[in-house]
Image (cartoon, rainbow, N blue to C red; front, side, top):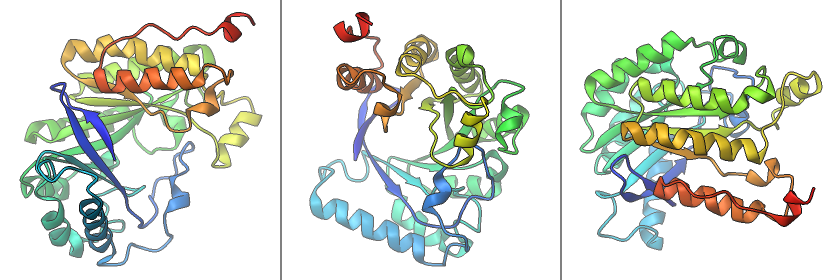
Length: 298
């Protein structure tokens, strides 16, 4: 449970459900989400059962006030794969899922551009609220994107974004800060340029994600000098520079603060720096950087 800022500047309750199902067919070099999936196709009935149980638990615990649940809150269904891939989300479950999520103000799902087709449009048309599709742009660099093994070109992303835009489905884009194969000094520049590209394609929200290791392949690239993890300074600068870009078009840019300590070099200031990023995520307003006597003294 968290609060999330809408494109209109409102703070809305946002409930994220992490669903267990089939593994994504794409093997992006940076991804570790396969650790939370299964090798077999998702069993019919599994996802509706998971969603029904989770929504019942949220109501039971009162995590969202009754007057906001569900018509004034948003629901994210993240399945570590592609929501419109029939192997991950069986077609037979679509009716039950639509009935469960239909009342929400906004429903967010994640999907590779290759699966943004008729099924996506049909799902959106049957909701009472608005569908938002989260797609990984990752990095708009013309030489880096092909090497991420995402099996997607910039033209593929743009075509899927146009398809969503034409029918009024909202777009959320994920952008990596310091992906592999990108020289470290260019990490911030290409995070901002990638965010600009996503906004140009109609994204309402861009989420900056510091590139993490942990999947084995990233460690191999690190050892080979092909990956330099981002620093907390780079993460902060990327958000600070992307903020006016988002503001200019009435969009929202946030940074993923999960496991942020990994990128910090100073334990004395990492907590207030995290708090600053989280405040900016909610307000959309720039703030001065945190000063630290220990960092400045080095």
